[in-house]
Image (cartoon, rainbow, N blue to C red; front, side, top):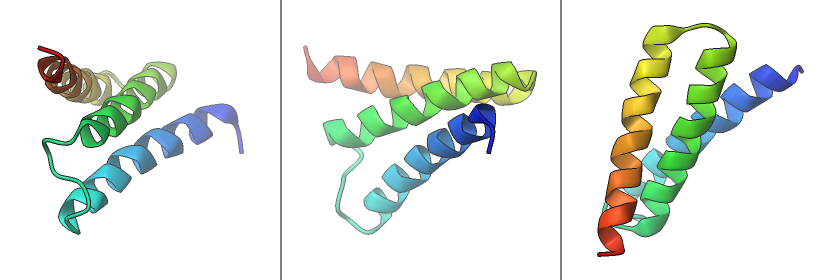
Length: 77
């Protein structure tokens, strides 16, 4: 498997994992780890979308990343 595909799979897997953990009640949307994993996944998917030249997908993941990072930064205040 080429590295670009791996990057996309790890990014998507991270976001799906955090979603699943939230759905089964292990992580709340207010948990640091929930937003950290979402930010990580969105960052990887932003890089992936750039590499495959998919600008709509890139926009989606930039917004996803910024929202997750905003939630992380609010915890430090």
